[in-house]
Image 1 (spheres, rainbow, N blue to C red):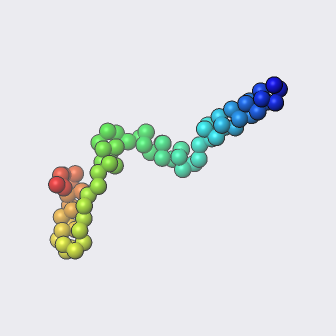
Image 2: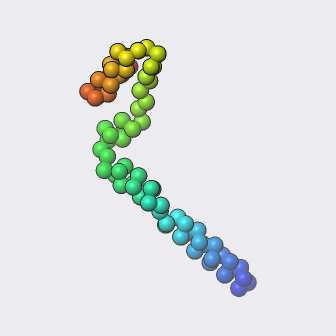
Image 3: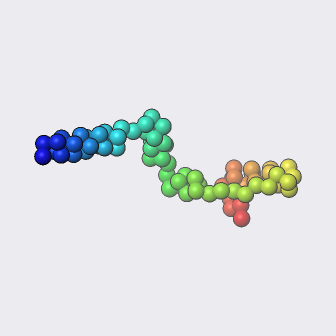
Length: 73
């Protein structure tokens, strides 16, 4: 009985420590994410298709659209 209690206590303790311990990278990601407003968060979910085979003009057009925050579609 004492072994079960000790084992359960240790398991709970180690599980709690791994959950609480946050890596520096995760802490940085969380801090950046918390500093973002709704538009920034939505922007992180966007993926702009760029086709280098369409030439330099296409790439420049995409860059201009991204810089001016206009629709790419």
